[in-house]
Length: 210
Image (cartoon, helix red, strand yellow):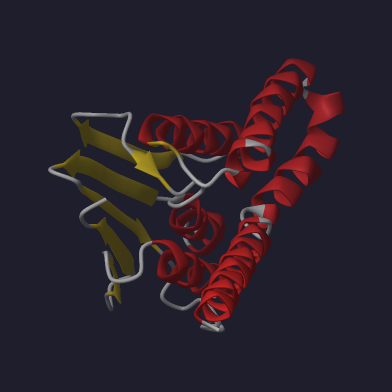
């Protein structure tokens, strides 16, 4: 009887773990489709206008998609891999737009080999461009500060936005991120966001005891 109970408990735990993995894979598969589709649409018109630039965009985009499809399915990746992914993302945006964007990516990380959940920060960065840069005709900015020390990772991002732009407030990307954080980090994270009346949106994500 005791042995049977132990087997049942193990089976329940296994099923819960498999369900958790399936949910994580589903959530990961929803990351950044908006950006990829937008970039492909831009490439369509750019191929005839500027072949060299279109080729450079395609190479950069394929590198990002490869990381998202393959490395993004792993349980953990190095912080360095995520940093490179974000740098490629922002470089693609610089190449895409015909306007000046003030992009700052300040990195203060002692150990880049720290393991984290893949595709963790990209939703916050994508939102900054989608709801900020894409809606502004000029003076758009995205400022990011990433620090890591003593088993703590701190990611802060702020961007300006058009205060007259009507937002639906659904926050699908942010909801996705929260679900993934709950599944993997549980009580070991803090996610805070604020929007000022003068049109500056800030988000801070802190991972503790990683």
